[in-house]
Image (cartoon, rainbow, N blue to C red; front, side):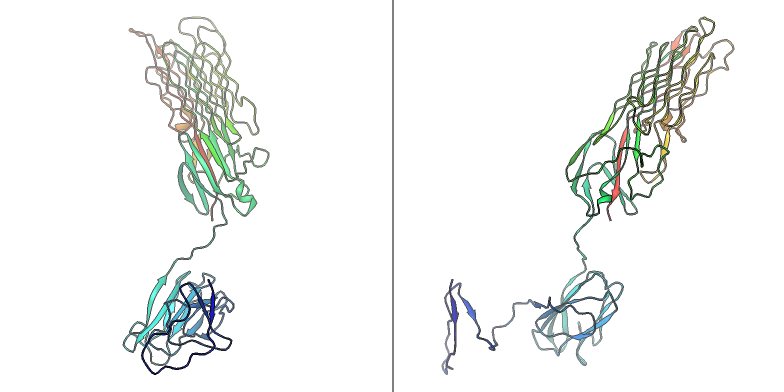
Length: 459
């Protein structure tokens, strides 16, 4: 490509075509020279070196950045001529607070009306072309977007909701928390999280209730929700995210059973370096299993048994409490009833030597999801339906995590003990036994599945 300089072209009297340069050449005007007759292409020359902050008069062919952050002001349009063009844009996205008035020259019109136009939309940009005396200046392009760079954390994954300035990602099953961009504010990258494991299942036949799934919570340094008493900030384990993928594991609850078997443990949940241990299964004539919260033990024929340990393996703050234990006493065919499974904030209630099954330990209540919700309560124990001296069928129980206060109650004495609520991390109620012919051993409920919730500031 070459540059063609034309110093002077003599006037011609005959019609014809004057060709300057070849295809691809650049035509340069000399210093002080100007052009006429070439026309415009419908664009303007943006005046980036002169940001407008007060009333001014626009010139044909120019575009302006209007900064109204200090106060409102006016842009006066030039005298109209066919094809004249002027553009303006909201420089600081403040037109909605301090508007820009666009005023035509004299009695000229804007859109057929001899009156001012007021730009009052955030981020508004406008382009006016003068057509004729009937319509005057016509707005040919009106953009009302206020696109800006995003300095905040950006991520995908799970079910996403918002609460004020915070975004909440809830995982009720396996998934990926994918961080696409970290925040320019370092503290905002330390996220809030709740990791709840699957709850244990209660045993069957005078058994202990299932333990709640391990409960681990951390409220980020810039967050504002009401956390549980187990909030790990300070002293717990912070998670500061980077722009990468974080696989999410959500543990299933333990599966219920009958035939006098002990309950099955739940399954762990995982986010980054945080693992919450599964809730322990309730014992059936056996010790309860250890876990995030331990399963309650089941007493049979006067033999003492111990509730499963909680907070296993140990973390700080504790992820759960032990299950309740059962005492000894005189052996006999009707002796014994189950203790409660441990919960996130309370041990399962013990049963020293009683026909009455005991409730599970209380769970933990947090508003990390935007709504106060209880998780990881312990399940109630199971008992006899017709034991001598018993108060009849024990109170119908609900699994710890599914009850309003996160507190387990006694399990049912016959088939159909309650399941824990889905994604509650609650331990399930244990099953009892009914010796009235035909003899029936109840089916224990299923432990509640876990949940992972991640929360961070997004605006």
